[in-house]
Image (tube, rainbow, N blue to C red; front, side, top):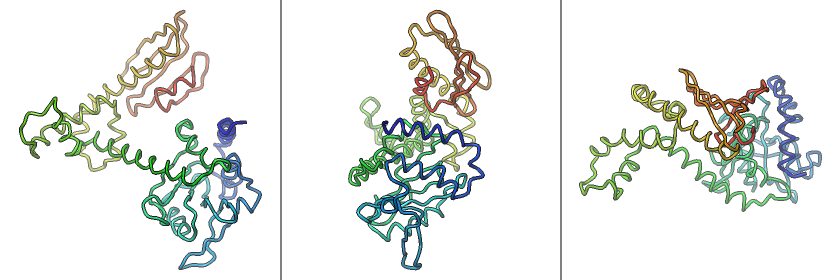
Length: 336
């Protein structure tokens, strides 16, 4: 059985016990969630020569400190794991524990998990000092496995190669910085990006680009970028608490219309490639936009609802009461 198939079965099993997890102790979390996770990665979780529980990580200020698990190779830890109970929020305090353990050995991978959220850390910034931010993080219930499964697969016992993992982690970190910077610029374009567009040959007038000219074009830059990216202004606004609420209110109606229309168009483009002679009837209301999906024989196969409050996408198949939340427009491929 392939790793992807094993992981799919694992997610299905975890989903069945999802409702019980709030009452899990740390030990129950380890047994029901965490140990099976590392088992499908190919590690023998019952062999202490390979998967050592309560691994001692003495620190300078305290002896006898233990990390929950260490994955060993030739007697040396290659991964250390700090486990928390399911439902516990993973905060900087728990990262601090791993931070202390990390510098006590030559291990370059540290994992913090509550069995649902997994955070992978390394020392990309300063050798032998754990980074503040994970290079890989995912939630097994909320994130699309297709996005992170290839990254998880590289931690399989038979594929584990630290140089390759670190190399990919550097690129993942770069991608995260790009994503964060883009979100910030989509909300409030920086001087650098406004200046970049003003310097384009199609725009350049020969005049010196002053601070006043940059400020004059900032709002136009923001609206144009949001139109192209179909951005959810509320989502980005949450990350920018100091952004002026009057600007958000002023542009909310325009952005909402652009976002819903953009999502609808992307969905229909995907469906055209899946359903011969596909057709859709759009139904618009104050709270949502609904697409009724039909085949060439005028048979309705389901409907898609795009909520205007948070731009989430819901799919409901004709004859099936179950409602599916799509992670992206392309995710509709998994339900047709």
